[in-house]
Length: 415
Image (cartoon, rainbow, N blue to C red; front, top):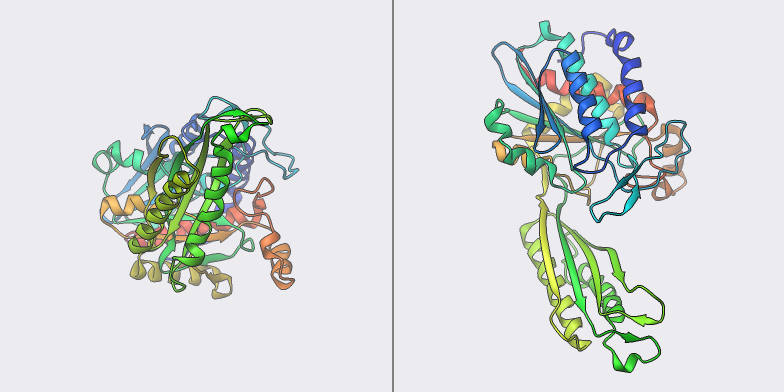
């Protein structure tokens, strides 16, 4: 179903823009989204929803019942990242917070979750205005801790689908480095599965001037990092896709002290169970093998966290949603995408409920700048999600995100 008209923008848009800028200025780390959750709850209550806070930690659930019909779940994530913002925006974040390790860290919405919250708040309000045009139930879910790939599971374990109506479909979206106003889409596997490993390597410390009297875990860690890069290049079949990244390497306290230990944080992305198993086994083989080759006094400790499954956008449901989005926005604004190697936990909702998930991207950066970068072959140089310089332009990003969620929901609700 298409939107009846654009009159909603006159009454809602200014408030949504203010909400977005406020959220951008006041980001909160994963699991600490108390202020953001309160803003989401206020927006839902103002639109007439039944509101429940504190689901799975700081999660917020809104229910709008409008007679018999399907239950449609709309989801937005709320958390920010430990990144120092460098956008130069007048509403840029200057927030510092205490991270999981107890250190003070800068915080910024470098992944666009503030835009996600504002768009779901807008779609919820717009759907409330359009109640004469649909029947059923809207389940609006504001999820914490997506950046830890933990919030969806926490909400599910807190009884999301026992305490609230079980949905017939889960709809989600993510802003990204596409031209603002464009809708990026894909059927089937959209985003990769994610597995994370914390690795502790053991050496024998000593004075930096006497390396022969030590087992140097820094050198060992360096060999592990380099060797891990051979997994995808030499072990994963060319027709398959995987990514292995060492995002954290910590060792030592002073330049003339060889430490006792080194720690690595490793992430693995994959799209099939077979490749996932191959890569995880290879990581363990390499870590243990390099430790043995270096003469480590004891075996390394490898702690795995299985964070998120492959995000699959149900083929049949996705085609139906895309038909509605294409009809509303025009096919010229619809952009097919390749698989994305990043990961998302929204798929856990559909998996737990046993219903289809449909997920799409939409553009945030200035369209002219992105198109020029594509034409000049420098698209990879543009700020993207998790960059300290990433921030969507407010318009048309906000309007597009609100309308995409609303149009997709209307097409799944009863008429």
